[in-house]
Amino acid sequence: MRLTPRLRLEPISPRHAHELWLLHQDDHIATWYGGTWSRQTAADAARTWGQGWSEDRAGKWLAYQQDTGELVGRGGLSYTDVAGARRLEIGWAIRRPFQGQGYATEIGRAGLALAFDHLDAPDVIAFTERHNQRSQAVMRRLGMHYTGQILRPGLVEGHHQIQPEAPFVLYTVQRPDPPNGHAAT
Image (cartoon, rainbow, N blue to C red):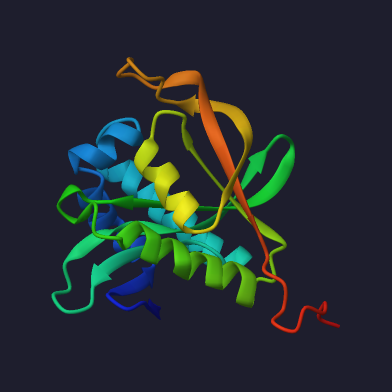
C-alpha cells in the first residue's frame, strides 16, 4: 500500500474484484474501456493485476480518498508490448465525480516514483486515444513528452465502438538523473 497526499493506493488483487467491477460501471470509465465490465471481466483483471504485483513488482492500485475511504479510481504500472518491445506503462482511470481534481496526476506521480525509485526503470510510457485530451494533459503534467503514435484496439473519434486499429498517442518520460548528475554505480 502507498499513501499520497490525499489517496490510499491499494495493490489490486483478486479480493478487489467487486470494487473493480463497481469502478467500471462508471459511464466515463466505461467509455474508454469498451463499455461496462461484467463481474467476470473484473475478476479476471483483478487476478491478472494481482499476478503483476507478484511477478513484476508492478501493478495497478485502487485509489481511495484517505479522509473518507471513498473509491476514486485506479491506476498504476503494468508491462505491455509496444512495437515489439516490453515496456513499463503507467495509466489511470478516475470516476466522474473525482475528475478535474488532480487525482490522476497524484496516482501518476506515485507510479513514476515506484518505477524509478524501486524498479530502476530507464523510462516509462503512457498512451491514450488521440482525442483523449484529458489524459494527455495528465501525461504532460507528469513531465512526459510526445514520442509518436501507435495503433491498438480502442476508440476512434466519432465512433462509439472499439476499433481494431485506433490511433493512440505515445508519451515517454526518462528516468531522472541522480541529484549529483553522476550515474549510480
